[in-house]
Picture 1 (cartoon, rainbow, N blue to C red):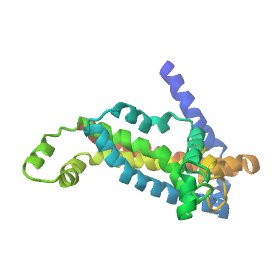
Picture 2 (cartoon, rainbow, N blue to C red; picture 1 turned 90 degrees about the vertical axis):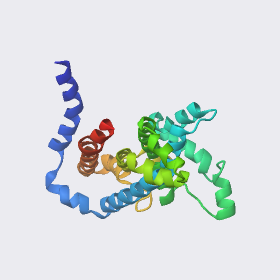
Picture 3 (cartoon, helix red, strand yellow; picture 1 turned 120 degrees about the vertical axis):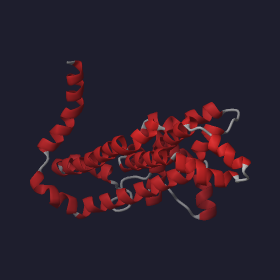
Picture 4 (cartoon, one colour; picture 1 turned 180 degrees about the horizontal axis):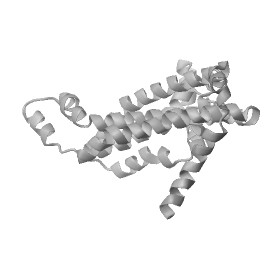
Length: 253
C-alpha cells in the first residue's frame, strides 16, 4: 500500500504533464525561434560541460581514489558539495570567484579580457560546476572498488603511470566513466539556478531550455509544458539507459 502511494506520488506529476500538454501545438512550440535557440544552446553547452567534466573529473577521481594525502576527506566533501548545494548558492559562489569583481574574475578581465558572467561561456562554467561532481563520485567509486593488481603488474613490467592509467585503469572503469558522462550531461542539461544567477537569462546567448520553461510559465504555460516534457523525456531516457546498460556492468564488477 505504502509503495503504491509512493509510486503514485512520484508518477502523478509526470502523468499530469502528459495529460495537460497541448499536443496540437507540440511541433509549433519546438520549432519556434526562441525555443529552438534555447534547445540548441542547451544541447551545445551541456555537451561541452560534460566534456570538461571528463577532462577535469576523471583525473580528480583517480587522485581521490588512489592518492593518500592530508585533507583527502575534506577535499572529497568539497568536490561533492555541488550535488547537495542549492544551485542558486552555487551561482553566487561562482560570481564571488569568477565575477567581474570576483577573486579570479577581475584578474581574468584585466589581464586577458575574459568576462564569464552573462556569457555563453558562463553557462558552460555553471553547468560544469554542478555536473562534474556526479562524474567524479561515480568514477571514484569504481576506482576504489577496482582491484589494482593489474595496475601494479603493469608498473612492474615497466609501464609508465600514464600508460598504465590509459591502457589498464581506464578500460576497466569504462562503464563508470560512461555512466558519469551521461549523468553529468543530463545534470548540465537540466541546470537552472546556477545558470540564471551566474550567466543570466539572455535569449540566444544564455537562455537554456530550463530558463525558457521558467519564462514560459508567465507568458505561455502551454509552451512551458511542452518544453518540460522534452526535458522529462531526455532525463527518463538517460536513467533507463543507465539502469539497463552501464549500471549492471558496474554491479558485476
